[in-house]
Length: 124
Image 1 (cartoon, one colour):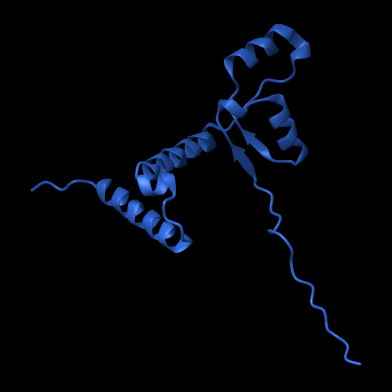
Image 2: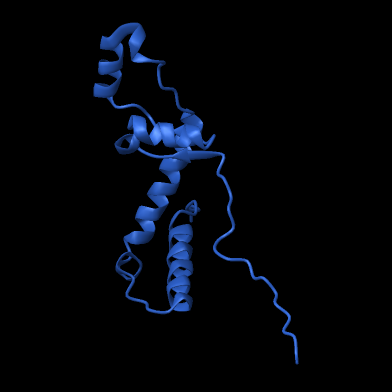
């Protein structure tokens, strides 16, 4: 009788925890903030005006004011603008490329085009 050797393989993706999650005002709900707080993740989400007004109206029962790191939020905005520039190329926005290799090649090509266009212009 031959005994088989079993090697346990890792299953699923590696579990990592981000230091912070940056999002826009659409995700500023109390439930989203509680979810992140429960997992000890910093929320970089500005508060909507109506949420701040309702909290202020409740007075001391309204809870603490929501703060967010403006520097991290600015980085989020920079990344979002880059993604919008990448998506301006129809092939990337619609994902016509079926293979991961050709899609990645399109991303590299579009990023190169953005980088070239953003180079400072030299006179002459």
